[in-house]
Image (cartoon, rainbow, N blue to C red; front, top):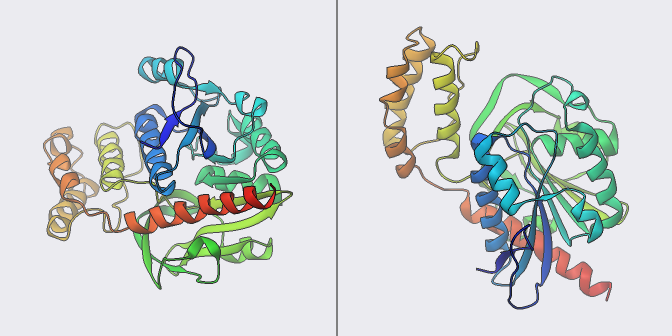
Amino acid sequence: MPVRLARAPDTGHDGPPARWTCGLVNNMPDGAFEATERQFLDLVDAGSQGRTVEVTLCTMDGIPRGERAAARIAGRYHPVGTLRQNPPDLLIVTGANPLEPVIEDEPYWDELSGLLTWGVDHVPTMLLSCLSAHAGLAVFDGIVRTTLDTKCTGVFPQRPHPTHPLASGLGTEVVLPHSRLNTVPTEGVRAAGYSVVLDSEAVGWSVVTRTHGGCEVVLVQGHPEYDPSSLLREYQRDARRYVLGERDAPPCLPVDCVAPGDRARLGELHRRIVGGEREPALVDSFPFGEMGERAGWPWREAAVQLYTNWMAGVTDRTERNG
């Protein structure tokens, strides 16, 4: 596989020289930590078009960890400060579980904002996902996110803007998953000087870009990295927490998250749950795993093309700079 991990705490590696170096800062909570790592590495691998990418995995200190995630971090991950010693060609910062209404009150805010501020001066390009995209708007542009009335979750049509290099090869319409509690309006990012790559009448912008200093910042409000069952697993988690009384708000049913033949059955489960049947057995006996295996992946080709275009742009900048 073209993607290989940079030297982890107890390992080394051999192989051909890397065409790119990449920092992946994984800020997701324990339940999604391993899946997020796999999903982003998979897209970097696919976008590399067979060229070697050396990835340094990092995570921030302000996110609480359980035993399993802590063990994985000890064996595979580095402190974020490692990136400052050897700045990568590409920097990806994932989203995180929002704990506070105001993003600046998040326990990891100082480390995250410091990383983004450092990145624009030392990294050719950064891709900031979901909460980190909103953090970038706050840090670079003073734009405040707003909380949605209901969670934006599902797979939605997107309009590529064909003149933008990141939209090359995407055609006239694609789909992408979204899963978020907060948003920034499209008119707000346009007014701040961002170019729109993908947007949607249903859910606003998905990908925008702007150059800050010497760095091209790519903000991704959607989730091209998701696999076919990601949204369904999120729904299962939220539904189970609701029926167990661990959360007060009922789950939001994602749009088009399963195969067409499974939508009616999933919809009936949802109606029963929000209608008052808060029985754990109702969720535990439901065939989420089987439905996840049947779910489609209609955004995969667009996601790979997006990452291919992004990484090719780094090649262009590197060659121009000698």
